Image (cartoon, rainbow, N blue to C red; front, side, top):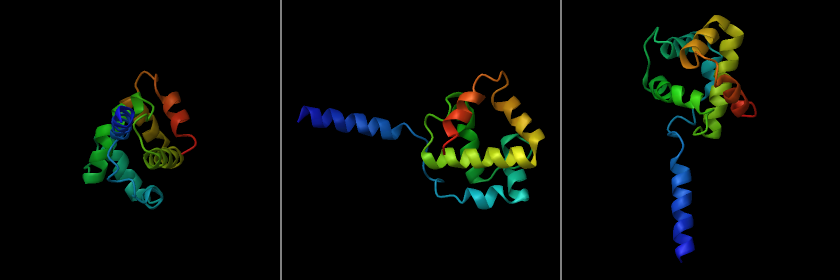
Length: 120
């Protein structure tokens, strides 16, 4: 019985140690393949434009997610970040540089983050 209780607590803590899944069903491909949406999201992340509820939620966790190589990201969140970064790199490479400068100015975390989302 004790083992079951301890196991339940461990599972609960492990599950609670992820970012909110509220936006995990978001159609990221529809957003990032639309140039206007991609630009708006990026402007929000770079403090150059307004943020909506969804981009505000992602922007709040982006510094920690970058620093911790998305260790608290769900699979869906890793996929969203990967798709977002792919499209920014393809369409707005100067913004990708600005994002790196803002969220990883010393370049200490970007390779670990890329590796963490590579298979997402």
